[in-house]
Length: 105
Image (cartoon, one colour):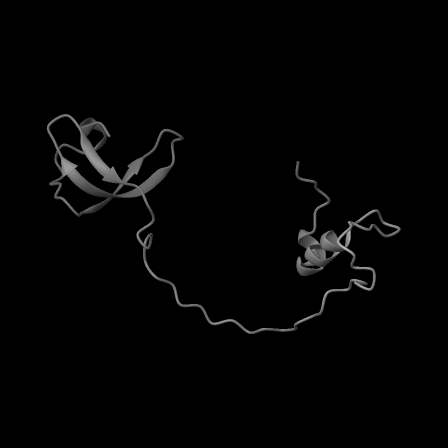
């Protein structure tokens, strides 16, 4: 970033977190990496970027796929909805609000 974007009366030091205005006119919190006479190199990643996360989850339910595999001869069979067995298996794994009808080439 250009050095003029930082207040001239403010003492800047490497590793310091400061707020600056970005190109979309929003204030951003950045960490100073290098300070030069003309430019300042900053790290605009979130301060927790690269940190390990430990999550605690609760499994609510485990469901078996709702697929009839009785005619599993290797061919792609379709049901009345036009979906193959594989599409039904993977579709049943997605939460109802996130299911999308898409096809890949």
